[in-house]
Length: 416
Image (cartoon, rainbow, N blue to C red; front, top):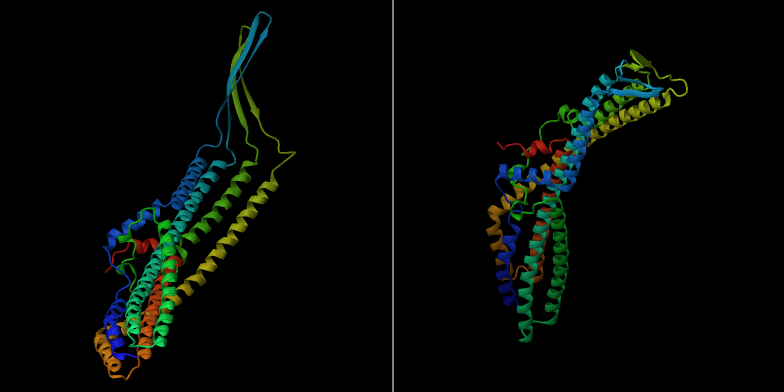
């Protein structure tokens, strides 16, 4: 085999591989502009438009609860008696002596809170999904570019090897070995391209206004370190507040139903004329709760409130443990990611020396061509692993922000 020829080929392709392995994954953009753009994208997504409409419906229901319970009604009658006529007209009003409106006003407060917090919880989940899709696309693009660059270099190497084989300088086994390596790279490139296209499609689905230059998460967005655990993360979490508001809303709704089943009197003063005589009267009506007192309806309402209370406690319990787990996971990934960055900085500082040393060892025959190719492949594998580590670290941060309910706060924060 003409090892001198292969050394020349690999010496030409090595700088391209090293350049890809050392390139940064994340690109920076103007953070405030990007934060504003991303917030607008979340608000404009059809899912959030529908969620806002549902929130507005809940707020309208709350407004309705605060209005008076009973409207007045007009009463009247007319009859013909011989040559004369009798008529009466009056107005009736049911009086809220059971405090139903007061109970409904209390319910309206909880209904507004439930509607607002439910929307906020959905907003943060959607924003977290969008951030996760951005991170996944960045990682998929990095894998695809790395695989494509490696394939291109192997393509050039194969072309040169075939020409040398025709000239009789190398054997068939060396060409077949390199072709097998290329076939694996072709498969890797196809898979990474497919993964990139799927990741980009997912991101486009979550972004109403697709702008590639803004679709990478700026480095300045990520928190440098996680703050210490705070009870406010749990007590002010939108999911917790929404669950608590739903429970309290159903409690007050049960009170409203209880008051609504009680008898409320209707008073109807009227006046009119009977023949030549003016008449004035007043009518009083009181429903009699003798056939159906609606106790079962009240009981059902109180059971729904009890269920909502249990659900609130379940949400509180789940998020407490989720926050603990998300914090530990993010810290662990952060530690490993920081260690990797230290190694990467050290490798970047000494990379040229190491590459030159590797090249000299190969040229001098201390390394065989297969060993040389194996080392290069190990470097590619290491870069792929570093992409996975960086992606998992970013995703753990997003999960932590979502679990602690701090996504919106992070999107409005200003880096120090």
